[in-house]
Length: 123
Image 1 (cartoon, rainbow, N blue to C red):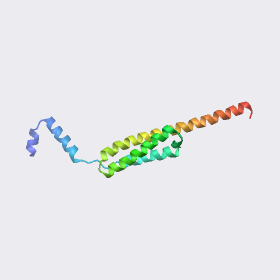
Image 2 (tube, rainbow, N blue to C red):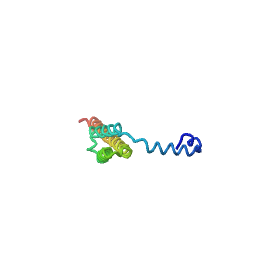
Image 3 (cartoon, rainbow, N blue to C red):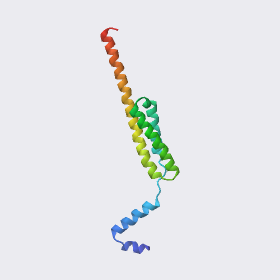
Image 4 (cartoon, rainbow, N blue to C red):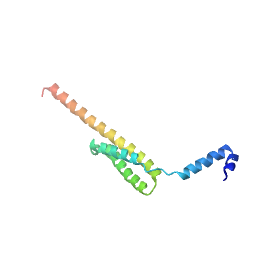
């Protein structure tokens, strides 16, 4: 297509031509930052004892599986799909962190209640 022919195209045609060229021309780089973030959140969940709380453990396991899938997708050159999988992995890992924190807070609250009850009963 000659440059003068481009000016003859209606504006909407130029818009779609630009979108098509952009979609075909660029490839997404590997989602390294998102991978690191998902792995860090999973480590945090593990350090907070997510394995002790069933719901937290489930979400941590899901995050780990999704991280492994994303690594395979990245190796296969499917970076866009890997990025989407890592978004899900990050969400599951962060949910696992929150559930583990909640479980720890509930445990601390229970210990505090027991201590107050012991003090009230004079033991």
